[in-house]
Length: 442
Image (cartoon, rainbow, N blue to C red; front, side, top):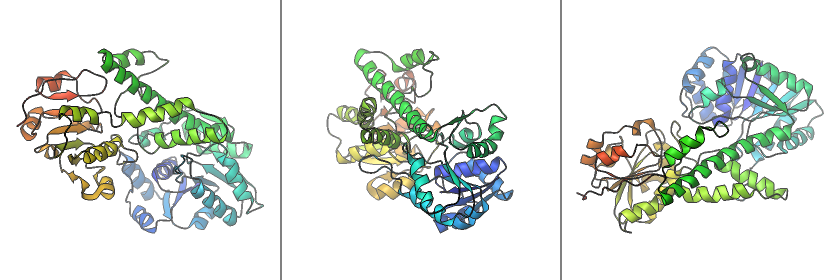
């Protein structure tokens, strides 16, 4: 089948590459000429493990194409996926201007039946707005479908090729048949395609992400209470997760959630509820708790340095909002760096994958290291903000030699408590006892 993807951001590029991998001819449209030229040359504009191999394979197989010409791609395709940004406004509402602008353009350009697929995360009722926008410009028949993505950054290729389910919101039997044909390679292997109405499909995405945000936040609350009463959150989460009604996933405590989805989607669902006279109390609480959780270790760092961070050198390991991505949107690292700088600390950060994005944002307000150990040179303390695998088993002897003060503040619970303790480090993590060995600073 011939398919057009409008928008080559994270969702659009992964979706387009996946659909090409399934044997379709896919035309990816973007208004950024430089980006399009780069993709034609085989340059992947985002960092995502294992994407480049699939991307290049489908370009070479002449199934994946790139253009800035929407009309050209539209004329070649029966199905048009909208994978456009829906950034949050100041009030938390999703900005649909990009989606509706392209819908307007499609209405003016289309010359035959099309299926318009909303892949972007959009509020309930967006399919109706897209339908109305296109209808105002043409009398040609078309259908609008909601087909939300459920991709985890860092695992997007795995998730796109082995989804737990495919959700499709469609009222038209013709559109359902076309979507079933596109996803037949999945259903042939037992992956379910769940058909529903468009509004239910749109809400499914928001509800899923918001529930996961609540689950993470609840576990962080439990972790904080563990510290009050002397319990160990690692043992609690294992006990909880062993109940198959709960499961182990998203029970890892830390310094809050971030990224492009959870914060935006929670805000948008809260705002949508208010617009309809409904108050999502649990989501409002989740948002408030997460805001505090992101910087919960800063007060512990202050306490360690007896209230004075002026001139203290803090090494930061990790800048991305989570491992295996270069995404720094709503990253907890940024909240902590901002607060530590305000309190007079000096920051040296290490994250080779996300560094470039942080440089664009912070410039020379902080320093950057080429290796995780270079960041520790003369550091008074280490702050771990991202759970990159390379941080899991460091050389503590080398760390001790390089650091001025042997103190670790771990926002991702990277180490068993006995490891830093055996190596003579002060170690503060989330929801576990503090290793209180405080050696004299050099």
